[in-house]
Image (cartoon, rainbow, N blue to C red):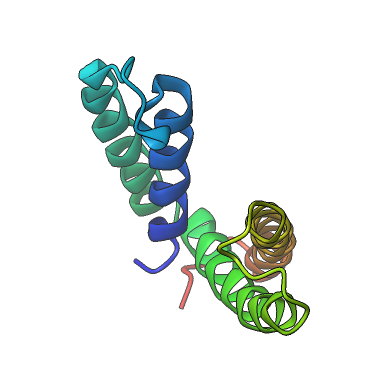
Length: 119
């Protein structure tokens, strides 16, 4: 289930930003962890129940990987690598755009196949 991993990481990142745990701040509230686990398990269950979403999520994960490698190489060659704040923001934006474009392409591909089983 390759398509689940970027979604689970995104949920974890978002919860970390909301709770303050992603920034190692003193006001980190660990009470978010059960919610994060439930959200990631719900997404995993949804991908098992709706195979078309699983196909779209897998294509999105592959598109994100295809976007990440050249994006990181370009940023590293310009001196704005992923370690800098600007490079991290640009690379994060590229990953989100790559995932969304891949998800739309994967969903269109899955819908075009008809109502039969996804192979």
